Length: 543
Image (tube, rainbow, N blue to C red; front, top):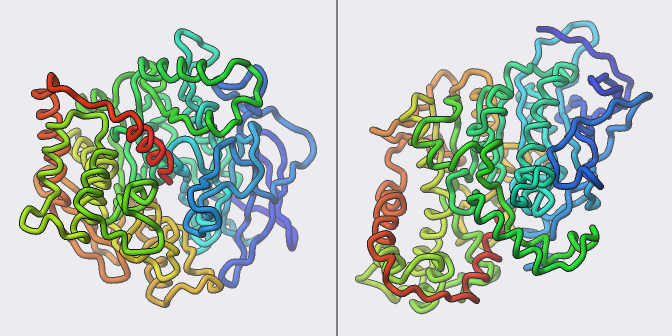
């Protein structure tokens, strides 16, 4: 497949199946990248289309401007630490609107006289706990990845919070999972149009982080999405995590909760922070998601594609600073034993005391239980294992068991410009800058080692998209199997092959904790209502 496109000195045009668009040329690393920003892929989901299954955008006449980032979908910005760069970098940077079903495309500039072969395509799904996030963040800028690896990069916005995931009982107008259906519609747009941007529709790799990674997993599980991409990268998130999905019964319970919070059907009410912060998430609807995630994974009823799974060494540190006693963003957060126990209560408030004690026993150094640093690190490990590490590894296990080909990495680096305290380590979300090539922006002040590191990361991802193996320079990356559980560490050093990541801890969460909870379920459980709501608040800030 070959393609030849023309462009002006500062502008570039192409034709999609919906109409002509005008993009712009970006100067990148001594050359140009073609950028088309804010391309509509769905009708504005307003009025009668609010909450509903998205519909493809209507065709237009003339040339549509695609030189500016689009609106961000309605959400509540994170105001936990106003002015702090580590928070502000994730907040929406374009106006909030219901009219937000747009995507962005970056593609290498083609030589006018020599047609280029169609390039592999990366489609990015942003994270944000299904209630926040936007494709226009600086950290998701696709220009460096596109230029460095000669790939086409696509990012999308999708409906969030109640707009994207509210579900009403037996109401076909508000079926739920609209945000996931938005993602699918964007993938259909890519299949129909990406060749016009130099991309190969038969070589699409879907990738995302946190809730975006869980979304990638949901698309793997959904029968209607599986043919729209060939490979997947899941970075720090999985649909089998407790925070990623709920039952239909729970979805309807949250609907009843929303009725208590509002007494009008006016749209303005839906933009109030109290409603935007409600934890609406994907749910088992029998349609997009035909069965419970665990059932689909256990029976092998999902796409067995090549999948690259990623985790960060210190996944839990980002979340404990949101209200856990003793933690802050300025000091070392050396917590007392009582603060450790309070943190465990926040993290495990939905289980009984016996189950919680089982986790406390495992994550305690009983020879040094009053060591503040160990208490801090143990609580962070508990949160990271429960929320991310063990669910992601479990998904990799299931894929391997059913004939898929998983590859696993562990990211271990705290960047030189990271605004968070150094003790937080390889924080949730902070591998993204290296995947998208941000250190190649010399104005940001990354080290030479980090510049080389980002080049290596982009090549790993691009090699996976091209060949199905992320290894470099002829060295194959080991496949993750149930028996050996091989993975690779990624940092500024040479990749190192290891085995059995957090194996003991993940057995605790997948087998022992559920068994203890089942056997001790009759034991009185304290509701701890205040702390449970505090923890819900914490989990809302998944990036």
